[in-house]
Image (cartoon, rainbow, N blue to C red):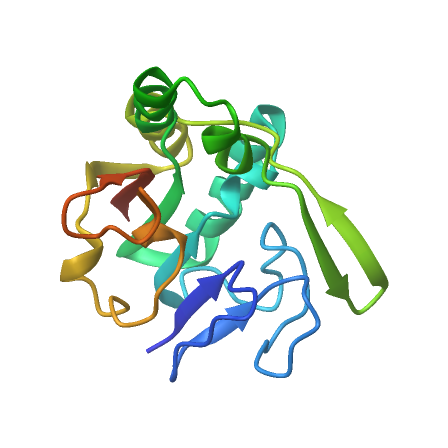
Length: 184
């Protein structure tokens, strides 16, 4: 089985193939997650991508999703997490504090890549409807939200488990939109 962990950053899931621009020893392919040319068509069993799709603009994201569909086997699962715009609006309306939502909305991040330091920024935001439409356009069906607690990667804390207040996984508001779908 080939399970891809795209945009993994410093997070490592044993037995998975890791793809990211970052220069960490555990990353198997140091490239952008929109270039999976090292994988053949219909060769991947599962793709998991947490909080990396939003680094591509709306005009780029459909190409990224199509690339993911290209490598997935028919019926294989794509699991993607992005900041949830609807939840962030709730956080802002509740707190009135813009600083509570700026990170998830704009996502400025400095990374060390094989080519040297790079600055990355979020270029778009999603709610369920927008993400579902993008995924369906990219060749996926049966789009639905998933619970991170029910996944095989639940023990590897990442942004799919982002809550407000921070780390309040019992009573907090999940601010990650976690969606899974199947390649048609």
